[in-house]
Amino acid sequence: MKSNYGRVLAVFMLLAAIAGVLALKSRRPETPAPPVTREAAAPAQPDTPVTVAQNTKPPVHKMTQPTDQERKTASAPSPEAHPPKPLNTTAPAVSLPKAKPAPAKAQALPRLLELGADKCVPCKMMQPVLAELRQEYTGKLQVDFIDVWKDPSAGEPYGVRAIPMQIFFDADGKEIYRHTGFYPKEEILATFREYGVAL
Image 1 (cartoon, rainbow, N blue to C red):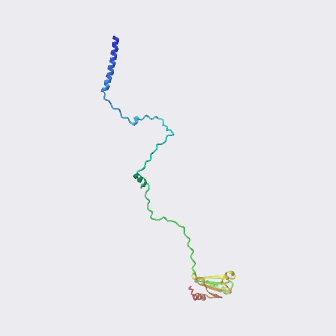
Image 2: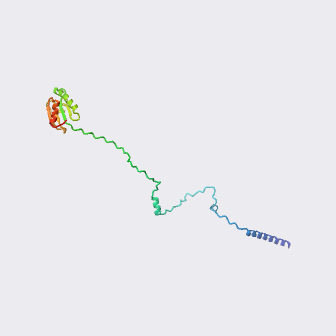
Image 3: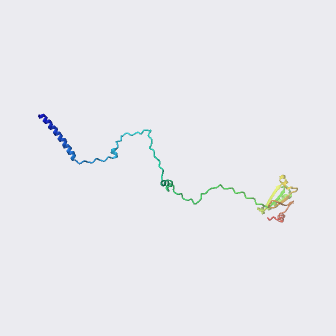
């Protein structure tokens, strides 16, 4: 009997202890559980790097139609991207190749042509007269001499039969007079005046 009584007492005491613990728990104010953060909720990352499978495709970005306002904003150039260029009021200097000046047209002059030879006596007498005319009427009268003995072909166009022969030409190159033999300077000038050629 005594042994049964002891067992019942032990069980009763155990039950009393459990009831006391439960009573203490019910009396304590319940503390709210701390909020769960993303860091806490996320599983711990391992220290080793995560390898991505090679066959994974990148995320697809869906294209949406832009609005009218977005189109205007995108098409309008920003002033910072393209600053206005300063106006160039002066045209750049362009170096052009210098054109060669056209050769000046030789002024048409009256002409005195003597056909003779350097060994002919009257022709020798004419040489100082021709030299004076060249010097005094430079730019006004053209004075030429052809030696028909040294160059017979040069005298053929003029039909020379005797020397010295003086042929007078006006400024247009037209023959106006002929003379054969010695001819003084004064008479040469008078002949030009007679045919209206002013020297």
